Length: 396
Image (cartoon, rainbow, N blue to C red; front, top):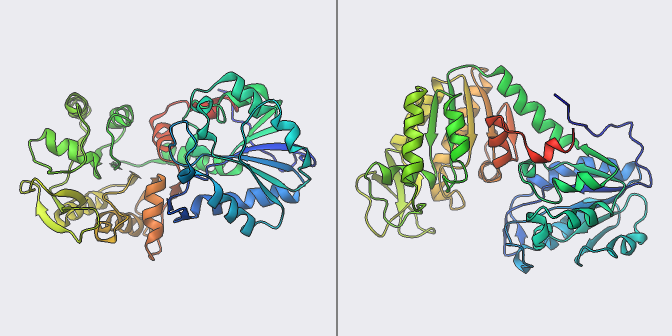
């Protein structure tokens, strides 16, 4: 099996134009950055390239603008933050990517940076368009992917670009992610428990089905649990559910039975009539029509803590509730604390993934100890699943 080509410190990048794919997809509120983690983790490598006198062209996305320009999802706040953090000139290019773009960047000097506007403003990005990939590749001499969290996507700036540029490498953040997750996979100790949050089952069905074959327990939390509760005959009020998910859930339970994997869903919950409410603890069978399930309840937290105590490896992806309101962050933080506590005692191998997971943890003032904390969500799960990631395959 061919190995991923990683960026080497010995690589001469002076005066070379580096097309650098980063994941600067940070949460915004009224165009203000709420969690700077992903940007901060990218800064050391950026500073290294600046020191090496490379000419750096950064590509990133923000949110899901659905292939149209949306001022609410502009990278302007990220551009301003980079300017504050880096002792070099940082430019922001908001124009179209075409044959003339390369010549427009002729002003870029050694150690300087151009940040491109949200790459997902261009429909050709999500279409993995060859011509668009060629245009992106023409901007640089070397391509570096340091966005592991996007590497499961067949998109132009992640996948096709490597086909049209002379040299392609994986960056240090990507290497850290691959090494850490690979180590957990190789060294995992049973019982293995996987805790999965999020809202859509359809996007995680293959992951869950494949994980069932390799783990002892799967715990479903977050909005995704609403579908399982509905399947079991519970009423979930106005809570978010995914239509036509019955067959998917039925198949999950059938696979779990086949492979002797336990599937756990919440027994109680914290509800409100709106997302800004204070919350009320309720049994799962007593949800009113106007109520929304926004977190797991104390019985469920206790059950999850007991399962973590009985586990030797825990994988977590996604929050247990609507953590943006602190009244509904209790479940997410309690689970994280228990995982951290057992990891610190050396009794647990733990790996946590996903931007929302990290944001929830960062909102807390607690100090946590995990074997590995991954910024990736979907890529993290698909890599665990054993899938070949398109963004990694092109770097081999």
